[in-house]
Image (cartoon, rainbow over all chains, first blue to last red):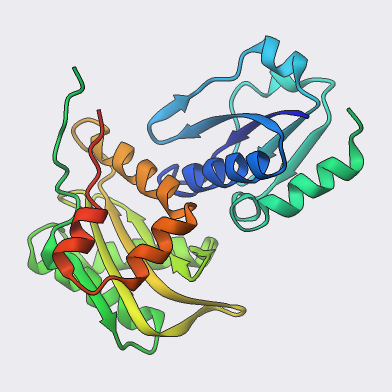
Length: 103
Length: 153
């Protein structure tokens, strides 16, 4: 399973990075490949390339605040969740993806 | 060569292990006052208000017994982090109890983004269960300070 994700939050100070770390951790535990872009107060880090989007089975985004460059994900299966859910329930989200998407 | 920079977001005067507090407001105000006494805020009342505004729109408990209340405002002079661990958990929001609190103060405008990189690194660390367990078990202020001081290249 290949996943790309984008995390952000209103102040871009902490939840963005907590969410990114949590998704990475949960993906690893479930044996998934994941690439997480952060759009925080520092700016965009680890930007996801279109080729990575094309190769991904799905996209996870946080929806607490507007995200930049969403056009990249046109036509992809998107899981939009709150940053707090990404932090607290990352494993549940990965299990859901495992159930819903056959690779 | 990796450039090692010692961060001063936090120091031993902003670390309070094994405390006994009953409410989140008491904790936020206690830690905010410490920051103010250390000359890190321009306006205490305005800073506390920015923290409460943030809590109201989005509670900052993140699971794992941790809350990270934060205010980003002109009332902050020096980017700061204060830490408290509690002997007994308290209710942060309805169904969430916490025993570790990280109060963050970030100015609207600051020179460079070094402090933001440090806070991003702290956030990543908090997802690490081993890191959380270690810091909760610590009572020595200088050891905690060491744990919360990150070298960012």
